[in-house]
Image 1: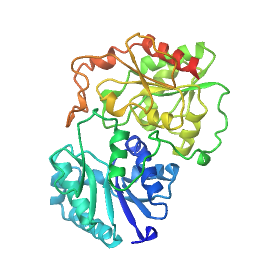
Image 2: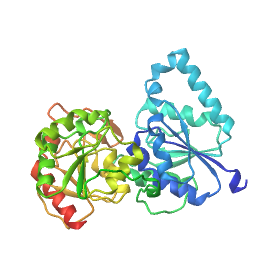
Image 3: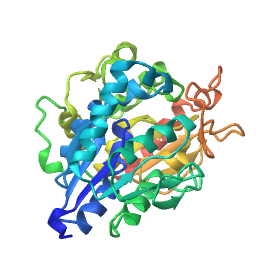
Length: 364
């Protein structure tokens, strides 16, 4: 088969941050197969990111949330929707499917078995933790945090024929717009972490104190995020009235452009931290229940409690507890809602984060 005839399907039914860290894997496949057709199955909410990744990718959207529970297939309309989607994949004639997911739950393994087998592709590549019997080429899953998620995804791509590439995620910055009205010197704060795991969210009052500390250094705080950041943004602005509120006012390229021009990007474990890393922005990320060895923004180093490190582009701030992490640990999903006290987040102080901000600003 000629290279121009090769058809590759990548499956990443995940949110924006999870899709962004797959960019090196997608780049690896494109470098190996420059003329191949590469389609990526994504939820509709993540499709807008694909053009920013470049590599001539085509989005194939699938509303995964409608099929996250096994009983969904008991509904005739959902069963018919799934059957039509599977038929469209089979008709596409894919040669290789790269499944960029852990098979964390039995239900998830069943869903991905159906999805990949529906393509009829002779080669199905993915991570195997014992549930991947349907895979034709298996990459050993050592558990969450044994390797960074970037490295896991890149290993899958290489097993599918990809080549070695720089593992740092990146986006096509030529597609970023000019955003008018930004201050000359500003820091970005993203106070929300999305609906999946509220336990990752740091207190809005503490972000307010961070905004005030940043403003005292002559740097304007700029607040970004989706609609779930509206309430914390209001709290931050009560504490730091000079903060500029851009919550729910930028599209995805606009958000990237705002981050690109910032002195430092500050927030908890979420998409904006990964986007800052892809833009090589100085960044400070607060971690609590989530597995920082798996999900830290690429290239970020640890700051434990008040310890000092050499100046760096990215720092991860956390307090190490015996129960941490409780989300994405071993081969299990863990606890997206965390524990009732969320002690790991509460122990991270404003002083811890301000110290990390000063370190990355000093190195920028």
